[in-house]
Length: 307
Image 1 (cartoon, helix red, strand yellow):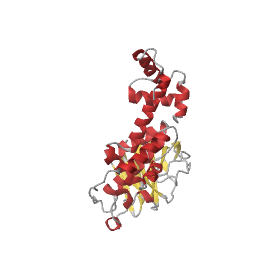
Image 2: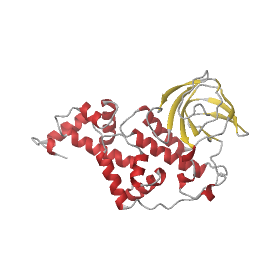
Image 3: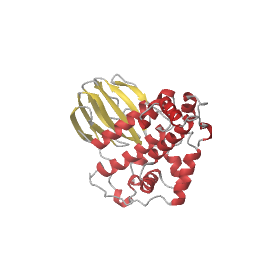
Image 4: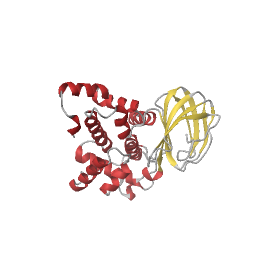
């Protein structure tokens, strides 16, 4: 159900944008939350592969594109795929629904996403599908929506990691001939490259950087880097960065001369509320509660010397 091209929102009588990642400088994914009313959706030729995930509402949705007619009794969890360059000639929404639209550049839904040869991918573009249910895509959508609506200092790297993961999954599960391409053995990131990446993260932990920045440090493609990093450490780059930011946040909270708002700003959070919510989700307590507990555990300590 293509509505936009590379995040440029288009309003119509059939709906409006509720939230968008446009302008957030994410390199391989664009997210938009839409409210769709009853009516026909505008027709364009998308430059990015689009995944539409229904969040709420109930409707009958008809669409036609790439010579294929599809009709579904849509409910939360229904998913529509539209490959880049495929024009949908007709999209009719017959009831109010809210959807998350995920846009991934065509170059990401290619053989690079799987690390397989061009010969294996030849003639296997992402298909034009209506999917009643796919729990993996739905779970990716839930994470993406959370990142879109609650921006934090880790939002960029998490969103870009989701884009890489989703592109690889689409290539494997929803290519034109629907054949699995098989598992790919990934060699763990070499020790020297891993050290360079970890040093980069440590030196830039208070700044905004994405998965492509880390991949450049490792001299790998973003998709290959994500998998080789996880093969080396057992967690994704986004998880590692989140853990490092949390470690730094705890150290800063031990310095009572630093205000909570000052800490949240220095770590790149958009607001103190977002910082508190993120800290509590990891630690089970608010920053103020953590600071008070630390004071009781180490009475009289000079927290400013703790690294």
